[in-house]
Image (cartoon, rainbow, N blue to C red; front, side, top):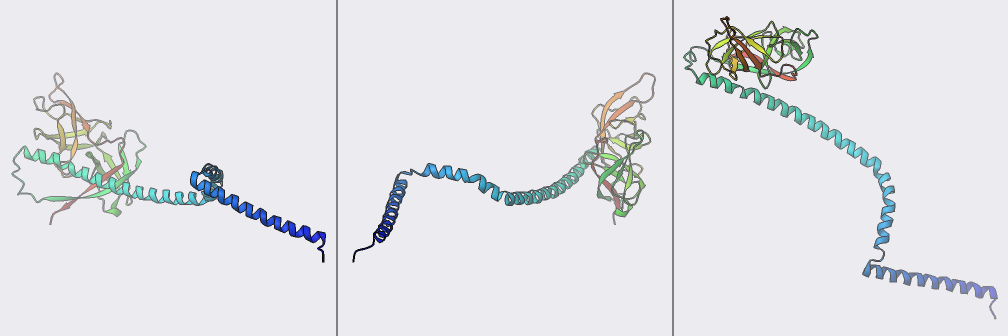
Length: 281
């Protein structure tokens, strides 16, 4: 029985679709082989990847931002902690190095009374400045350590360079410090080179102290180093105070006019040590 024309057309179309599929597969295989051999499509893949990069970037942007933010916060906290510990360790080491001045002074003379006095050790309390006196004429600061932290009135205060002053008033949670540059302050000092002792007084200038109690025939020179003499018991012996800036012998005067530059930067104080004397057992 003859086939209906419509049926012949349908079979033809099905066969035609199968032929197309086979042709497409063959062409694809040839193209893949040629690309494998000579990388014809590598440039095309590069361009396609480049066109997809913005989409990939935007998709991963929130995740990368959160990861980066967490990393920055953790690294910042770690750096702050390390910086705090390193600063404290460096500060303590530099403070201990100041004892070199004391050793230099002791090597210049026989210390006959060494065995006749009990040794005294010092403990140190680390403190930060929290306020400066609003009165220009008063060179005073407030620190964040007080009697709650075992700080006592009269304790000396130093930084990594030298003596700064001493505690004059307790505020329980803080303390007031009178700086050595204040006009009402006086500190017993010793000239390292000659072992001569005197008193250095404040001038109201953060960068200068004055000595006017040494006779005109005293052996003192520009550049001489001054340390605490320990007399009076307020300031421990051997801590750096400053260097002689100039020596003036005024005509008709009985005493020299000596200007001293403090070792400590009294104008821009940040961290410091409160020296707590502790008697040896």
